[in-house]
Image (cartoon, rainbow, N blue to C red; front, side, top):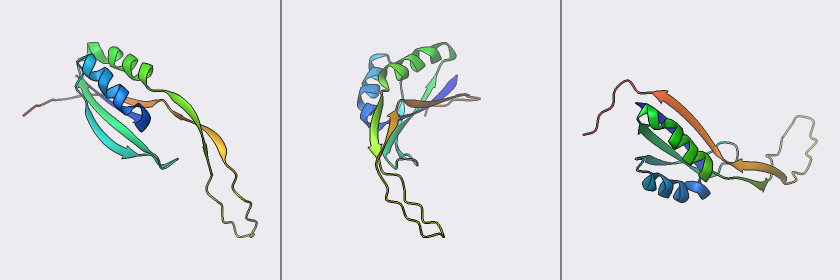
Length: 109
C-alpha cells in the first residue's frame, strides 16, 4: 500500500474529486491553506495499492491546472526607511504538489 498526499488549488478540487469517484479511488479531503499566497487549497490523502499509484498520479496531473494570477508582494520594512510601493506581479499558481509514501499498516474500522 502507498499513501498519496496531493495538495491542489481549490479551483481544481471539485473536478479532481469527481475524477477520483469515476475511477473508484477513495480519498480523504482536507481544507488547507498555502503559505505563499495565503490562498485556500485542498489536500487529498489517498491510500492505494502500489500498482494503482501511476493511475492516480495521472488523474491528478490531468485535472490540476496551472494558471497565472497577479499578487502584491509583501512590503519590506527595512531600517533604511526606503519603502518602495508594492506593485502586483504575475505568478504561476495551481498544479499539484504530490508526495508518495509507503504504508506500513492500514486499518479501516
